[in-house]
Length: 72
Figure (cartoon, rainbow, N blue to C red):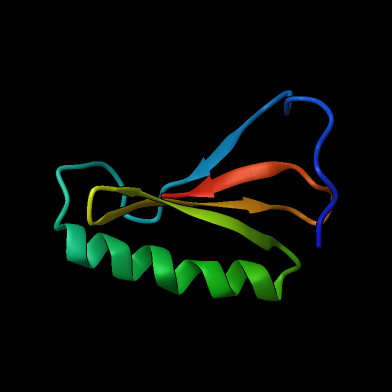
């Protein structure tokens, strides 16, 4: 389990796998869910999923150094 961070990131990265909107939300969710395991294989950790109602909004992750970023 990753340690809780003690300070806010100096820079927060969002990896936007679906490009600019408007989106087909089902296709966008598939792209997000495909990218997350790739990043885990590279050493990232999943923190949580954020949903907008029933729709996946983004996945919050940590890089190997504990910096938070989102896949959206």
